[in-house]
Length: 140
Image (cartoon, rainbow, N blue to C red; front, side, top):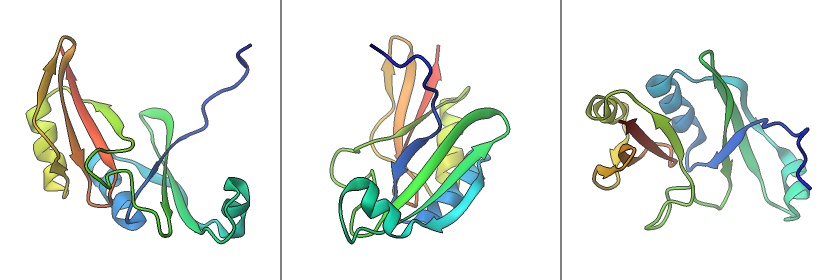
């Protein structure tokens, strides 16, 4: 039976460089830290059942949305964009896809592949300088 009393607290993505990711999401999308970058100490290792694992995280918010974006750098583990296929991404709906791509590229992001058209709109993946992946979607 589903727990209908549960509510979303945050979404989390692994990055290669926490400070670069914080700067990118601030400049490109207006996110600001609601929880400054912090070392999780041994609490994180205990929570995931992996002694000796260390991590730093930050939580970001923006006035226009209630969602909390959590960025985490786990020592010794690459970010979500590592390897040939991204492990996770954050999708943003944008009103003008070419303009949005140019805007994130101006902040250091790079397009991973080509713009693809689906029945509902156009979409593209980009890697941001800190190592996470964003999807920009322009809906029809």
